[in-house]
Structures are given as structure tokens and as C-alpha cells.
Image (tube, rainbow, N blue to C red; front, top):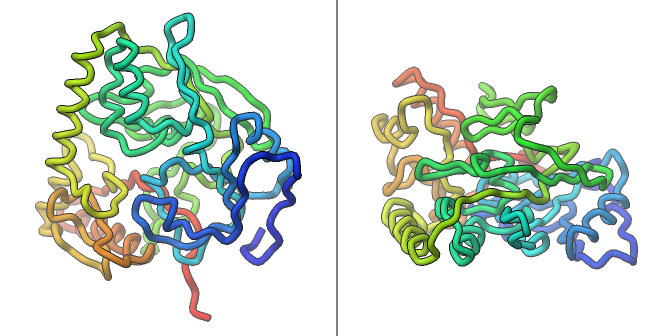
Length: 330
């Protein structure tokens, strides 16, 4: 489907909200990027199932949480984006003491809920600026913990609207990477053409995507967990440029090293491309200083990667997912 083709038919029985030609600046933490042909915010999981059933099988579908590790190129992106945040927000403790969490629940909300219900081990989720769906897709983590350490099973929806469940043994789970065993492995590199290839994305027309998970945490003390969450958030505020739009860490840490250290060692703190800048506060963050385009941001990602490789021999791999088309001159 091209950007100029008609939007998908929407059944009048649907309860969600469909937006056409929607600017993704409103839905990504970088506050930059082009338009989405369609965005759908389901009313709930049942509504999402019905909506997927209305789409042609050839329609590209890509889920979006808080947009905190997503960049949509300035030329926009075809197909339909599924907004999970504000839709799939169920969170409950089940009789077996597992916490069921839907994919649209932010990490900070999960951390607070676990603490409130006297669980320990979920505090690190407060430091992840995304929703559970994105956390599962990339095995997000911080402060020595990762989300898949706590996964008992996951709930997914297929492209046709069928619900399925899987267990961790069905996946290759690594540092900031998750791939279904027997399926295509995620491309972990960036193209040498100067831009990140559009195929470099877990968001590009997945045949199934996460809509929930059952997580296991140890019994704990609510007050102790709340204090730990407060300390982690204070540490995050002190070390990260949260006053400017950003997408968190841009690059994965290479083995036995830190991306931020390598970038800083190459003298790249403060490097700018248009209004995109390598943060002066944390070298593994690229910030939008005001009016940055997706091309500014992507170009700076490539520039940093190439300079670090030339000076150190280390190839940095991005955590950020980049989708869509480059803007062309009319």
C-alpha cells in the first residue's frame, strides 16, 4: 500500500478511534518525524481483534507504545499504526500471584503497581520510558535488570486477529533483542548506505505482536520498593537529559564497554546536525533542541556510528527503531 491509496475500511461496530494522515510528532518522544497513513487506538483488546479483522491481509500494521524508541522518517509511513498506550492498559494480580500486564501499560506504572501490591524486583521498570509491549519486543532493562527475567508467558495477537500465548523458551532472548526461534533473526546492524534501512525494525509488519504478559516478582515490602523507585528516578534525572525530547539510549552497549564512553572519547558530545544534538549530559542520547527533523536525527545517528567505528574499531548498533520513507523533493 502506498501513502496515496485509500485508508482501510472501518466497521461501524468498532469502538476505537481511527486517525488518517496523523503526524507522528505527537506520538514519538523525539517530537519529530512524518505522518502515518492511519493510526488506530483500540478501545480495548476485543476491539483491537475486530479491527485487525477488517484490514486487508496486505496492509502493513505496526504497533506503537509511547514512541520512546521510535523514529518515523519525514516522508511518512504507509499502513496502519496501532496505538497501544491508553488502550491496552489492564493490570492485575492473579490468583497464582502473577501480575498480568497489557502491552500499553507504561513501565513506571507497572513498577508502582508491583510495589503497591508488595512485590519486589519491578522497580527498574520505572526507569524505562516505554510501555510493556516495547519492553518485551527489545528485552528492555536498566540498572542490571531486564524484563524477560520476569516473564512466565506472553500474550500475542496475530495479524489476522487470533490470540496466542508463548513461553520464553520459544524465543532467542539476548541483550536488547528478542526473536522467535525458527523465525527471521533481527538485523542487528545499520546499512552502510548512510541511513538505517527501513527493514531494521521489529515494528515493520510483524506477523504477531505482544499485547500482554504474565510476570513473576518476588514478595517484598511496599515501602522499601517505593524508596528504591524514588532513588532510581532521582538517578535518572541526574544523569539523563530529560528536559529535551529524546528517545533514551540510542545505541546498545557493546560487550564489556559503554556506548556513551566510546562516543564521548571520540569528542562527539555536543555534535549537531540541524537541530539534533548529541547530548552534553549523556553521550548516548540524541536530543531535539527545537525543530529537529527525522533526517537530522537519523543522519546524526549514522554520523556518530561511523566516527566511533573509524576511531575505535567498534561498531555501535542502535536500539532505536526507524521506519517509513525519506522525504523527497516535489
